[in-house]
Length: 81
Length: 411
Image (cartoon, rainbow over all chains, first blue to last red; front, side):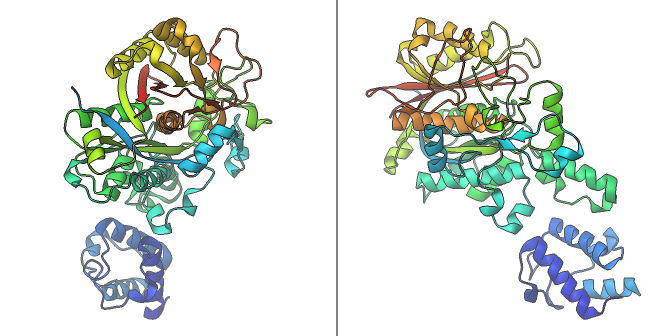
């Protein structure tokens, strides 16, 4: 079970690996598309890597509801519970 | 009168040089880029062929980590070569609607395809990366180069096995002549030093098995040749309408005076033993350039070092050039860097353009005992070409019976 801080740090690492964005640019209120400029293909790569890292399943139909980094942290946190 | 097409930029990443100045220096000196493979998969699968010619400067030394992740190695190599050629051309302002791309590959994203298959079997479908399709598609190189340059007049991918790179030159020339573009980034890229293609080429007895002596394995025209050596890399050239190049005061390396593409329609892999398709390609390219056999001073031969492939090219050269074939300085540069498959024609086009521009035919190495059935004048030590007007040819032939020829003239 990872804390929300650990999930955020883990996501930042995955996003950095995929896009080169600095980890401290990844904040809870940031939108994946509007702020971080992450396209749909990168988003799916990030989702799959997050599933492996946190041992959760993020269904494809849920991905469109994850508009901010905070949404993703909440989803992963609940899925781990 | 058709528009004249000139070459104003050159780029390459190869087993004997990660850029054009290094490639040219080594091609003139005569070095081998072939070595023993140290990858764990060589022993794991007990491959019969344990040698290849890898890039002398790995792609990760040139490209950023994140951009590499989104490109198959073949695309990485193509982008590296195209960026060098673009910078070399000195073009700063351009109408991007008049800039096209013709970038070839023989196989395309074979690493991506096979890695995706491994991932599917080992980890399941969820783990197959969403970038897999755009990375494995054969037009991936042309698309990435188009994206990189903002080239909007079409991005083409000629695929004709080992003739692909040369066919890309023909496509680029035709686009300019037809008035569909003023500048075309042409080239070829290949990254197939993977155990599966190595096993497949070895299975058809196409590869040299001189595993204990890699530097001497690629030996075109030598009586002891036993197959080609797999190479990898990319070559790129900026083709430009002459008036466009003159208007911006560009440095012009040479004129791409003629091209031709023919098909043997004889056998899926074996060359026509009489070289008829290749002969027609040579004659058609010389006609396209309006040159005579006597004008030719140099040929960059296809010459892969296979027992069956090298001789029909001689037969074709003799049929197309007549007695003048004896006066032509022939270079077999695959002796140095192996066979870059779909990239070979592009890298050899770079070398042919430089041969004309620098008036020097590059070296052919490992010719210890020339096959008496191939009595060409092979350049074993780099040789000066004459002053005055000179013309050179570059040949490429591919499985499927594809023949492609370039004619390069001084400008």
